[in-house]
Image (cartoon, rainbow, N blue to C red; front, side):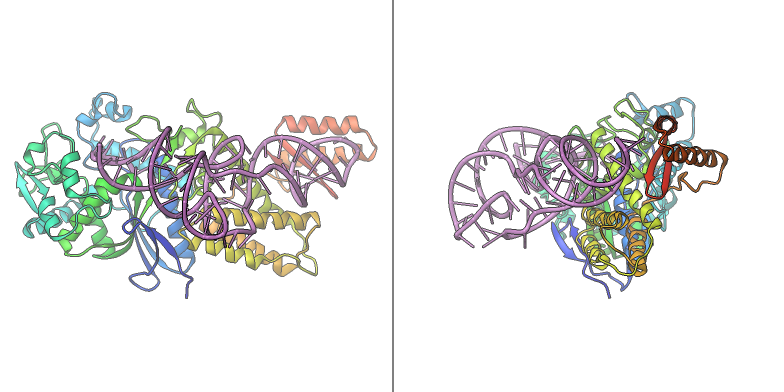
Length: 491
RNA sequence: GGUCUCGUGGCCGAGUGGCUAGGCACCGGUCUGCAAAACCGGCUACAGCGGUUCGAAUCCGCUCGAGACCUCCA
């Protein structure tokens, strides 16, 4: 029933035809944020990327179950809140806040940011702390099967043992021998048999703020357990797509594969999708690098490197204008270009609403629609999709300018094209802005002034006409003269 | 050091063995009393050097440059 969809699978490093495990159903798991700080541009990327994936499949008629976790345990130890770390968390510690208060605060702000970006809420948003039992259960299974061992109250995954039965490192292209040589010396390593073993359950140090009882002692789950446990719980032992940022490929997703395979005896994920990073001056924007700009700062323009505020939809457009597997380099220039480009798209849609149908049609909307689907079917190529939509904008403008003709059917087709791709699939929100039909007092006053300007123009009183225009412009009213009058909008 | 990715016009960013997206900026023209908007047109690039090929920016090799992962990170 559907056209072929190609997805680049990190596991095989090539594009593969998507075949759902269950017809017309999609199981999608994406690694969500660790909520210990404000969300930054980097968080927007996977959220928007997989929002597109989920929206597209939904549009095609799939029943999508989209699971995106909230990591609210594991990284919130006392020591991480120490010097040079997140100020709010540090403050929270100083003020003796519960870790859950910190988690709550940043979960809320993450949600606010996502809503602003018009990222749809996933079907399920499970939290690590709400699934301690499931994680412990999975650890027990792995222990039982002999792929893990206990050491000083912690449980470690036995990579070497696992590697005898299954290939460890297949996702990231690593070999166990190489890992041995290249793993750095870390604290607690002496507890492990091998440096590349990773924790499934960690014995809680006294300063650790979050811990749970277990048969191995007070502790907390390892950093990778939650995703294995929660994806299995909500999507089953096998599911279609697992997504996340490229930086998670190793060790996080590699560990996930190992854990799930060890516990279940087979792999879970059919297609691994990874979005690339956002860079700033060619370097990754990241929390650990301290060069990140939060979404809130973008929305308000409050960061020192920002020349202006950028609206959530500008950010969304900026991200979608690049393919998800390439890096996107941040700059004011690029963002401003995105802002103007997005504006052009919106103006095209507004113009379309005002178009009057004629008797004949000289444009082929169906061809554009086909190209739009083709773009998405080729590994979710949003930049090409957007390019095609600009072709449709050009059609609209040409019709409005009288260079092309459109009948009622064509106009309806165009409207449905924009509605499907711009609103439903790309997820752009069109804010209702004050316009010429505004019924409030200021709108009426502007109409009145512009009508006076028309009278002045009819009397060839250019001085008065220009004065009205200039003063309204100074107030932020953009005036466009048309054949039969005027249009205006607030800047 | 190991593994991997990338290098496109003024900028951002697609893509492909031959027909060479799109946006922003810029320059002409149409329209307009002038402007703005819109429309039409122009600007025609693929790091360097070799090789494969009838033909490569697209495939291969080397060089240079940039980056990612190997440690929490989206």
